[in-house]
Length: 181
Length: 207
DNA sequence: ATGTTACTTTCGAAAGC
DNA sequence: GCTTTAAAAAGTAACAT
Image: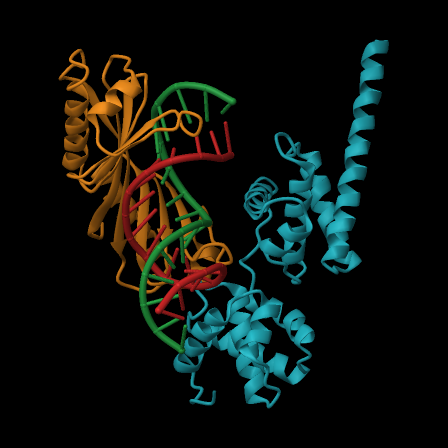
């Protein structure tokens, strides 16, 4: 299998501190919070380091986006929850964090003729009128790739770094098999 | 028994009513776009198969009509952009595109991406350009496609730039503004495309 | 004419309309 | 399906300089 380097660009993770919380109270412990219940049920909090954004819900569940590594994503969530705990001491120190999506970029180091790829490669969508990238859906691993004429690629939908890497490599090998690289 | 029968009549009545509405909607959109009867008929075939395959569920008739028309225009090589379809129908560009993807996938309609070549006749006639200019523009586009200069670029922008270049080369010069307006792209796009085309293809600094 | 900002596409979770 | 978040890819658009 051809080895291709990938760079993680964004990670989406969710967590649940088993307890309900009062958003208006928790917001007092966080700086620069955005909260419009009519617009969106979650409280938006942006952490400086790691630079991430968290969506906090009254159910005690939260979503963290923007981290560039799994460690940073987990660290960001822990830091955010620590801040929340300053106004709600009942919040537990142990809770589960789940990585939900990893977005990565890579370079196949070869230009692609997208119209040819669209014709030969299965499970693709290519509508240059709407977007310059070709959408390639892989079932194993279950990820979605955006292929560009420059050879640059975006992989999204993976829950592990290895699946993101494997997705890019399978795409590369498939393109090679079809003489499209 | 009787209830069931009456219900069937009621349903088929609604079905016919919906089909009549869809066809009138199709006529309205088609005439606003100045499309020939053949394309309108091709679109009605797509729409009817969508109905036969129960693909209207959860979707608006207007949306399916618009997407059917968009698909028919492409299939008949007289493409209209999603923006143009959205303008005449009362459906957003996003929904036309989404419904189009859904229909092509469910009905196994495989359409290659629109070729810039298909936009040449319409743009050229609206600009009053000759058949010679059209032929030259098409040659330019074909060369560009061979060299991979169209991957990821909008078909209308490529067609517009090729027509602009051809018009200059054959002494029927049109301004970038005129070509841009008719192709529905900006002058910046025409400039970016023609720079790329004249540089990557053999053409000298003729502009 | 060039530069900046912003929108198109893909993904996923959250609670609720 | 929508609302909100973040991020990359490359093209195009809108508005400023």
